[in-house]
Image (cartoon, rainbow, N blue to C red):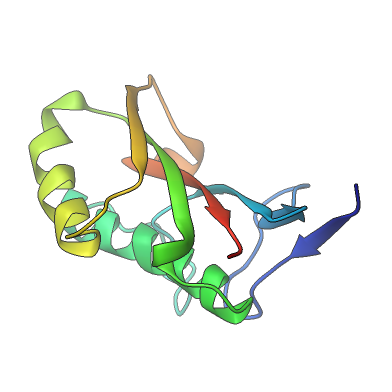
Length: 125
């Protein structure tokens, strides 16, 4: 099986990894932080951070001919599970119908002190 590295010209990569890898019809997106691409700063407010992270995921997908509708699975890493309801509210607005399968995990810390990170798996139809 051939694999193809996908990226976004609009978003920086923060380490030695690919933003996304396409293998067959699957696209595996690395965990995305709530990084404001204009400033390079991490968004700390959980509502704004959730929106920014999902926007970053959308950006990667759209630059590679896909959309949020192609996502079949997400994993949310939360620094504080008390933020779950807020994250859920924003997430539900982004995926109002036929939401992808999802796991949410509380973690002790995330890169750059971010309040959350979201990774995704998409399928090219």
